[in-house]
Amino acid sequence: MIGGSARSLNKSDMEPMKFHEHPPTGPLALGIEAIWTLAMSAPIDAAADPIAPDGRSEIILHLGDPYEREDGPTRTLQSRALVAGQIDQPLYLRPTGKSAVVGFRIRPGCARAFVDVPQSDILNLTLDPHSLSAPLARTMQDVASRAASPEVAARALGEGLLRLMRPERVDVRVRYAARMLEHAEAPSQVTRIAHELGISTRHLERLFLDHVGLTPKVYQRIRRLRRALGILDSAEHSSLAHIAARAGYSDHSHFVRDCRAFSGCTPSQLAENEHPLTTALLRGVESHSPTERKQP
Image (cartoon, rainbow, N blue to C red; front, top):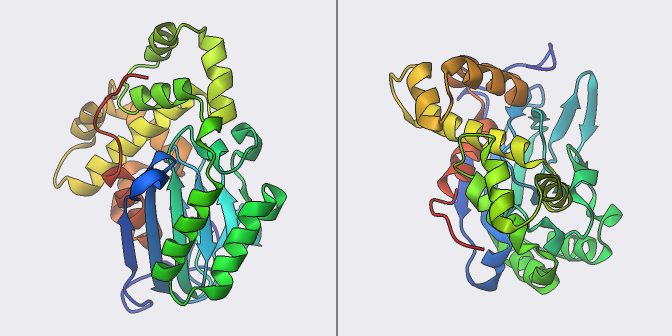
């Protein structure tokens, strides 16, 4: 973990975390995969939680004390309203007091429906929406000023995002490729998917960078790791080799290597340590992963 003077949380340090997640209803579901709220109180010297990539970007509103992002020795307090781009490395977030957070998880390939910038430009960044979209910034500011609770804010922000959403900006080829890659086990499937779409692998890569923020192969690796971590979190007394095989790895060493690269920890370290935010977000995103493949 980053931050030598910080300490890990335990039950006596904090109020029980309240994490709720549900899928959106109606037209908003075209661009938003899940809506979540989080409330927790933690000591100011709590350690940062490692957040592994999940292949999703998010729109986030802090109604309580914002989290602090740690990049090596550098600490940056997050904006109360922010757009979190894709990440391809571990993100360390530390609570600074009483959290009250609302998050909208964007479907892969749909980010430009809300923030019309090349998604590769905001890779590994968490940005104030004012730098990306004035209408989005105004909507989030208005919700934050009026909402009495995360639940109320979630409803109001959902209504605002529905008004702002521009589905015509979404490339259906990217959406199809992302769905197919959710459960792809071999990187070679990227070539097959491009062929199905009638475009070159390089063209698919450019589209993916523009609309998702990652290359198809990196996206596939991240989703495979998330499958494995989901199995690790839910399975009891399973060996790493068994978990790796179920997730689609050729052997457990590839699982361990990807876990280190994307989360900064080994699978065993993630399983043994208590990271409330890590666990909540992991369970949430995996519970809403697509389970079927659809044609473009």
